[in-house]
Image (cartoon, rainbow, N blue to C red; front, side):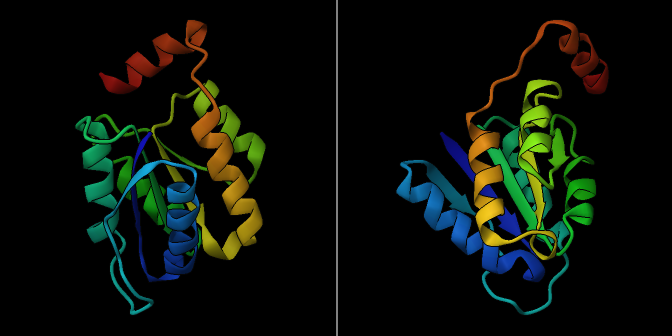
Length: 142
């Protein structure tokens, strides 16, 4: 799977862990930055991830910040990006199954690293159910 990855300074540490985890699992990952814990503005790194996913250059995107809220908001401003802010495994599973989320937002300050990696794995492994959910996704795209 091809994955675009980006964060602000508050999500940098987990971004690095996730990058290593995904590459070790055989995924092709592009790091859109940031590349340190020096304070930056999250839209500068999140929007390019969302645009790359919405444009079909990557299968999925993962964005990170302190809470993940701003990152989800920024990603969802891009037409074709469906970013789910996930805080546990079940929210990640449902974001994929019911909402066909193609971008995952995580808050580094909201969970430990092991849970973040578990959420990433579930997000990537879960498919979209379609069916009754498909019409709702089409309405989002209109």
